Image 1 (cartoon, rainbow, N blue to C red):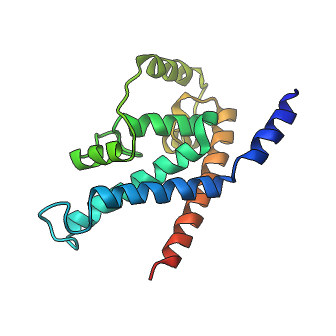
Image 2: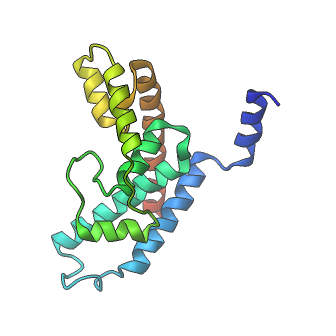
Length: 180
């Protein structure tokens, strides 16, 4: 069987990205709701700014996790995002996430993993990029796993990542429109 025929069969049997993301995102939101019912998760009132910030962080983690898992391991950015989330790192930041967010990662079914071979491979690929201009450096910072890509791969992954972010926004907007 040729590679193109295999892709056609695989893509026709799996639901579209938007559907996969929506189902995973709703499932993760239900896990969050079950593990921390509104107003009962802490001594803070449910409308306090700390509680709102904590819930926002949980929803953000659920959205990124759902998006990366809906895409699967086919893309560098999704593998890097899953690795970053499972390692307990905050998206776009270098610091570790709070203890409550770590327990939320466990709630979402994500385990903390550390792989030295992956880190070494990323460092080796990072050295391959020749003469990075400021725009390339910024893209490498914004796209998960971008530090390890050459320019061509970085642009391809960026286009796919932006497409997935647009899908994420559309799904989240349609969910918000259905709320009373």
